[in-house]
Amino acid sequence: MSGAVVAATDHDAIDYQTIADHALLIVDTRNVFGSLGLDGETVLKA
Image 1 (tube, rainbow, N blue to C red):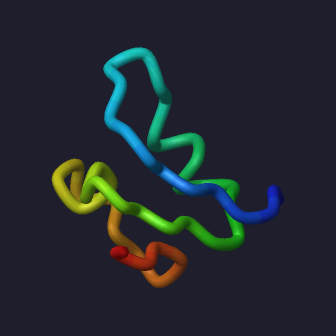
Image 2: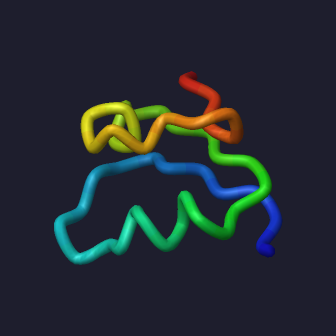
Image 3: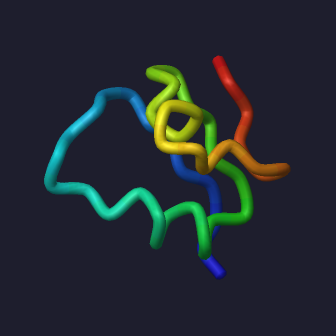
């Protein structure tokens, strides 16, 4: 497992599923994970 991830922008070349699977905490400032249906318990919308 990884540490914390901050999603500050949305890029097509990023594997968000892998990040969602392995990050302990995700701070999503762009609602990238929510728009992909990956907004689980570890995702905080900011």
